[in-house]
Length: 177
Image 1: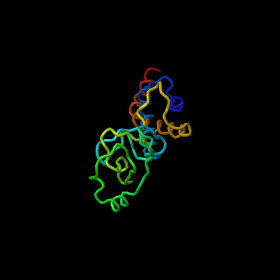
Image 2 (image 1 turned 90 degrees about the horizontal axis):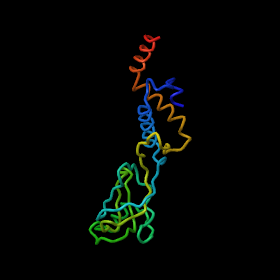
Image 3 (image 1 turned 45 degrees about the vertical axis):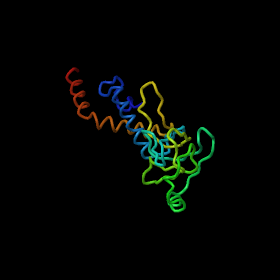
Image 4 (image 1 turned 180 degrees about the horizontal axis):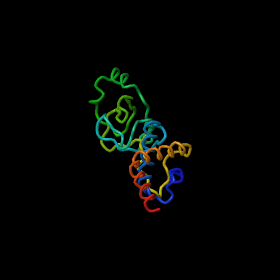
């Protein structure tokens, strides 16, 4: 579809790799603006202590639902409330499971767990992420409703990146004809 709109059916001006790069750029931009479009729901392994961080390519924590090993539910609490009620909670003895978590929206990929945990503790976590780049053999990791926007993005990116090459290709075609 993009090739047809670019009038480059024979891939003279834009290679598949060029257009795929434009597509991946558009998907990244979409997921940065609409952070709930690509959401992962996976078990993550925590490091020892109370301060934790989401895996690479993450954008924001949405929820921590349960301890993976025990199935015990985890609830979100306010960090201010936790600090006020248990002033020295980060120094408490480490546990094998999480009771509460607290997140600061100003630091979207980091969160705190109570009580502090033993390294290797696992929790089921839901977070928004930026998908890995796709190849030609893969499907696009966002909803079909974004096809028109991604097509327009790809065309704009293709023209922006290749305006000089397009002019050179037109000149070459004129010389050959």
